[in-house]
Image 1 (cartoon, one colour):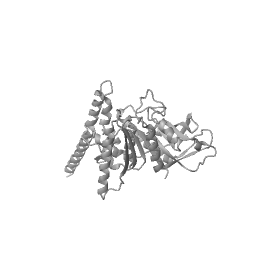
Image 2 (cartoon, helix red, strand yellow):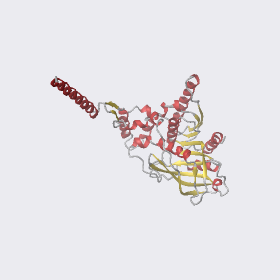
Image 3 (cartoon, one colour):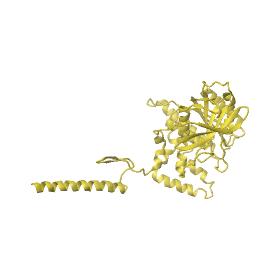
Image 4 (cartoon, helix red, strand yellow):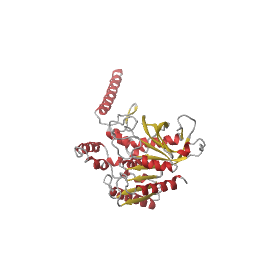
Length: 369
């Protein structure tokens, strides 16, 4: 009887060993799923096989964003109406610099330091890193906004200005831009008091409840993506935004490369072997868009065709109609105003002044009430 019991005990032990060996062999042979596997010892977290999956718009909507202090580093430029500073903040554990514009009246010794000032985040489009200087792509419009009483902050983005280098991985470098802007917004909300005089206790209080976004070209793609991630109604005005679906928005510009886009197409093909590109495309998440948005686009824009905005506006209107007839959707309709300019180029010339005045009116309406 003792021999028989020992025999069964040995057999049971052997089965357990085989089971565990099979489990871990399956793990190492990549037979498991991306998600955690169940084991007799609890949950085992596998090394992610698809590292970019964390950057889908749905997953970024679940992400926790870390605020940091905004530090005013030095004066960049001074006029009789505004002072421009270099500012820094931290995002994804990296330093990002940018240009901060403050209206001169807020810097006067007698200025009210208790009333918060509306703030506008400025997001530029593409600029070659070789020719980039802090403020390029935003400084002209930012100056007008600051002269009219707004504090503006334009991040350089990683790899530009005096920021830390951007990730070597080109997909990660693209996907983290909305994260970097959201963490700037959260930094303003968490630490709204700036000390721009550098040498005194004078402060400027930012109004995090009245915050807007201005964006141009690819900055428009970043702005719309972060609006969908947050699902919040942040008043936003867009100049010639890149609104074509991902990854077409990448391939469109690749023909300008020396290889006429061959390498870009290869990278996209590899990417789509492992990922559903629609999960990274802002056009697939218009159901998360809300608030007031203003778009300007020129008919002779060769860098971002006006048809992109035409199609985007149509898609937003379709989504608004869906919300209107559904009783299950709590998100309010996106209030979108669309201006087109028959003679204007990518920089909205020759209608630049008209566009800026419309933006001032837009922000006065939505940030000062």
